[in-house]
Amino acid sequence: MRDVDNLATDFNERHGLSALVGRSAAMRDLTSRLMRVAQSDATVLIQGESGTGKELVARALHAHSRRKGRSFVPVNCAAISESLLESELFGHAKGAFTGAVKARRGLFEEADGGTLFIDEVTETSPTFQSKLLRALQEGEVRRVGESTALRVDVRTVAATNRDIEQEVREKRFRQDLYYRLNVVTLRVPPLRERLDDVPALAEHFLGRANARSPNPRRLSAAAVTHLMSYDFPGNVRELENLVEQAAALSESDELLPEDFPLRQARLTPVAGASPLGVLDGPAGLPPGTSAGPTLAQVVEDAERRAIAQSLERHGVDLARVADELGVSSTTLWRKMKRLNLRPPNEVGRE
Image (cartoon, rainbow, N blue to C red; front, side):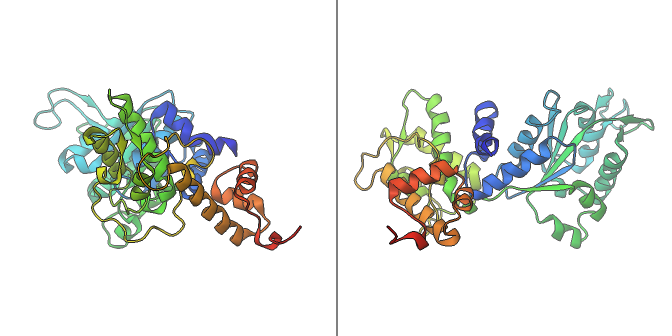
C-alpha cells in the first residue's frame, strides 16, 4: 500500500509527471491500476478529456515497465495528415512517393523493444485503422513501397479524448481495432472530479515556476479556496497555465484570488471538495498573510469535514475510512485524535 501511496510523488520526482500528483480516490484508483498493468505487455487504452495528462500516464506506464530502458515513442495522430500518417508509423522505401528521396524507418521500428504511444487514435481513417490492426495482430510492419515485413517488439499504448464506444457504434472506428487496443483501459479523471488534488497540484506547479524565477511566490489560503471553486474545463493543463501566469504577472510575493482570472467560477463550492492531496504530510505552503483564514485553517476545516463524512458512511470500520481518504490508518487515527473526531456510534461513550 505504501508503494501505491508514494507512486505519484515518485513519478513527479523522477519524471515530472504532474498529472499524477494527488491522493484523491480517483487518482489512487488510477495509480493502483497503472502499477498492476505496468509490468505486463498488455495493450492499454487511455481515455480522458483533453488536458488530463494522458501522455504522462503513458510515460508512467513505460517508466515502470520492463521496457523502461528502451525508447518511448509518442505520435499524435491528430497532428499528422492522413497522407503522411502511414509513412510516419510504418516507414517508407526510397522512391515510394514524391519526396521520398531515401528510405526511412517508421515509428514502430523506432520503438522496437520499447513503447509506442499512439495519441488521438480515433482521429484516423478506417483505411489506416485496418493497417494499424494488421500491424498489431501480426507484430510486424511493412514500409510504404516495400513488400517485405519487418518484425517489431513493441508495447502499444493508445489514447483518445472521444467516447470510443460511440465512435464504434457510429462506424467511425473499427470494432476489431477497438477490441485489440482495449485489453486494459485506464481512465484519467478530469480535474473537476478530483478537486481535492488542486492544492497539491497548484503547489507543485508553483514550485516549478519558482525554480525558474528570481522572485519566488507563495499561495494564499484564499487563492487555494478560489481555485477549488472552479470547474477547470481545461483540466490539469489549465491549472498549470493559470499558476504559471500568476507567478509571472503578480506584483506581490503572495498570490491572491485576483491573480487567477477564472472563466466560469462556481457559485458554490463542490460538495466534499477538500485538499486531501496534502493530508499525509506538510502542505509546503506558508501561512497566508491576507485577511481571512490561513491556509492551515482551510486545510484543517476541510480535513474535519472529509473525515466526519467518511465516518458517517463507514462507522467504526476505520480501515475503509483510511482507504477512502487515501491515508494510512495511523495517520487517520492521529488526525481523528487531533480533531476530536470519533465514529458516530461511539459519540457519547465514556
